[in-house]
Image (cartoon, rainbow, N blue to C red; front, side):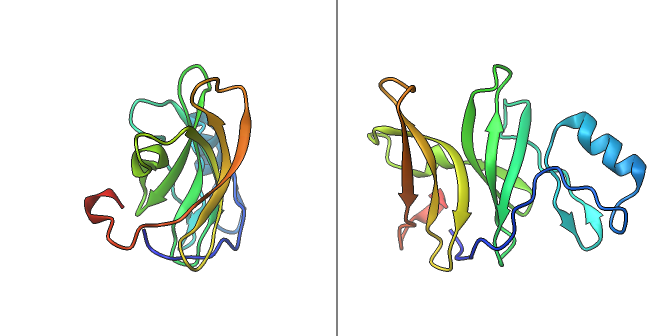
Length: 140
């Protein structure tokens, strides 16, 4: 994972100076988050198989954090790199007791904080701190 720092929270932002009314309407209709990028709205598609997404924060390195929702609105923590959605649960050890639901912020070390649920119940919420592994290979 690239390092970055959470600096701005954006969720379904449409600003007249950076997007047309048509772009905003299309963005809201698709229910995908879209931070402004070089004066345009970029739609951030959900993780493959999901139907909705929401961006919560963006780093100085343009990594976007948030969540992806399936058709039942069950959340999973997501990270967008170059517009591609990554389920953060695929980057943690399989034996983790937590299911990452929301990614909220990222710092200069690439550490991500958010909310998770216990895999055993999904009804008990916990805060989490995810630290990148120095040699993560293909998994970042």
